[in-house]
Length: 140
Image (tube, rainbow, N blue to C red; front, side, top):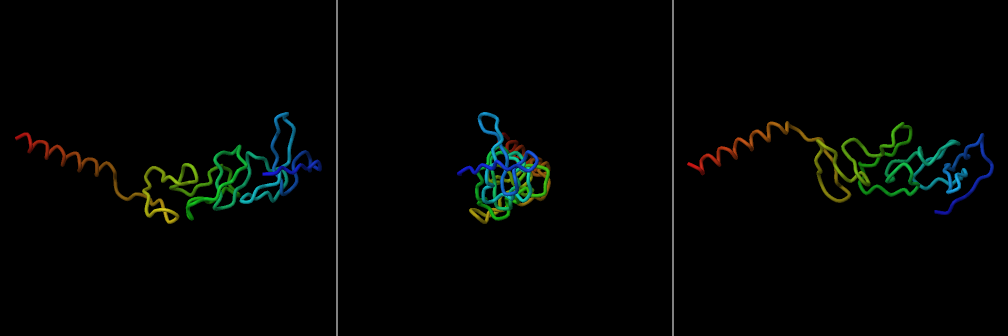
């Protein structure tokens, strides 16, 4: 990505269309916002760079944006206070991992994370009782 510097600052912040970060010498640098972000107001920094849906970045210090491989997974973070860019039920790199209490349905671009139904405790108790019964029968 090629940096574009802006020496015309609005009240010590970068103009619309740019985000601010600091170089190695701790000097404010204004960089053109990458595709997939929305810098529609002055004063956006690398730490609060707003992402559009279907885009992901590995950390809030990164200005390298990735296309989200799963249609429903990446919702962006425009208008939200948090850095979370994954839809509820998704997480991990590129929002490609189902969160706890969610299971993967489908594969490839059609992967969806669906909320699990039922109670895991009842399932574990059922299989444990079945295993103990089978073990008891084999001993006798």
